[in-house]
Length: 301
Picture 1 (cartoon, rainbow, N blue to C red):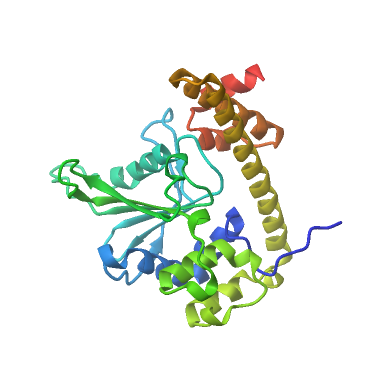
Picture 2: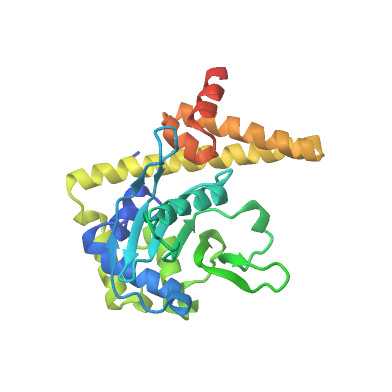
């Protein structure tokens, strides 16, 4: 039997995320989301411009970075918006690595005084960090460079925001802010069959119109179906690997057991990825390893 087709696109597919946030007709939606997310610390963002999402290192040997969405506002401040579908061994490391590219891009020759524009990294997660899972009510993490003793912000131009959507449990009747409405839509869009009355306002009516699968072209529909299959495969592979790695770590019962469990987990991720025809490039992003390290592990499978 064919899988029933949902009415609205799944945001947690590459196609769906870029359809809603990464195309020119969707720019007002991304602008609205960023404003709801950052209004208290950033102030109103009046305009955004999409930038090239692929960034190369300073030499051919350096790793490159491919952002999901990359844009800047009218003040020249940069925004990286990432969607992460499944657990990744070094995802926090990855977001830090990605943030270095918009910082390096600002370097100027000659008498530059090192003054930088702010960089924001927003990560929308379809999983919960293992170290945060016991804090079941906290789903938003705002991270800046702070002083350990005073807990005051030491440097305010580098910001990471992580949104753990599985922890967001509010139902449609419990939403009290526009930001909560955004989180509800991101998490539940593909489960809905109509626009809830609570969301019948211009911003979300536009979003639901763009997201309706029946309006896709034949090419868009094929791309979306391919993206859905990849989403299911990668999530299943990653979740399975993490569970197996955790079990092995527990069985060892010591710190070295945890380390061994992590190694097993990474090997399992690569093994599952290879069986699902994932590229080496994707596997390096998922595991945080270099291409050579991934290839070395593949050669032992």
